[in-house]
Image (tube, rainbow, N blue to C red; front, side, top):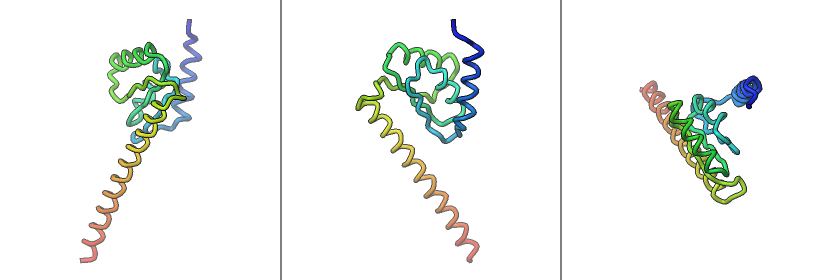
Length: 119
């Protein structure tokens, strides 16, 4: 039987120390049934839930449906596998690209506003 009080304290500690923001992509390695994935998904852009067990990942998907959560991507992989490393690299590259586009748009808007002030 799980220790509910300990699970709650662990969850609180993870949420507090993670300091996750709405634009963050979070990796939950060895995600199990997705306890932390589900909690963190409410606070971030996306969670990548990685586990070596298909059964665990199915539990994550079931729990997502039960909780109305849609921003968790499950990855079946050993963390030492090329597949997991490739998925991590793709996610980081996608995030960097999005960040770069957002920064470029902010700079363009600032430049346009400055040019209007100059006229």
